[in-house]
Length: 333
Image (cartoon, rainbow, N blue to C red):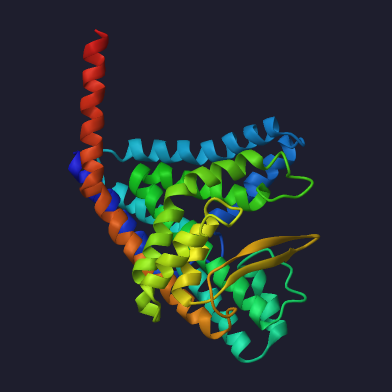
């Protein structure tokens, strides 16, 4: 039975990844968008400018999808085909690799055509920066940084949590990451209320972000990148970023592309100065296609590792855990 469950989970991850690669995000009735609307309604009911309210909000908004995932997992424990179908649907729902690469391509086309108004109008599909005064270099930098970070957030991390915790892991991770995007930023309204969601997202991304950095280094040659340079930049610059996770991905991407990221980021009503990551010129339109290619290769490599996990190391970890649990019960007696 456990072998069938492991196979079903692995098959679901692969099928869901394939669905995302072919179809991308649904244009209408996207479940993540529906979750965002529901979480927004919950926020309006429980909001207070303190961390206690933020903790309650985060616990309910993340805990509910996790419990739904647990219920679905229990309901399909003797039905591996149904389990695989649910995992495939869940994986497709939470992944965003194709859409991320598509947006990078659209931005690159606009910049190559010299159409700054179109490029500025498109930046909101990738990040929350104010594009009104950005030139080609800054638009390209914002895109490369978004592709690097979201390769972890929208591809690697969901696959990792799906491999480790099945459907509850997939749904719980996407819920936490969505809440971070909604309330996890430094604004007067969310300075305290959004802290629990931001910290949960940080914790859930600790391992996936570092895996993304390492995989970016490994696949750098697919975009004519230099592994040794990517490794050197990643080791030197990854901890300079204020985020415990974004710097892992961005430093590796900067080294792989041979560009320098970082600088002043202008948002609506505020700005932040980020340290420089990498050496070389600032990004240009020509770098966006290479960044998207690296992102796609990282996703495939992560899929290989995570799909193998339930059938290999995951089974070993589960067996050791069960043996330790039985030993503990015997000792208690």
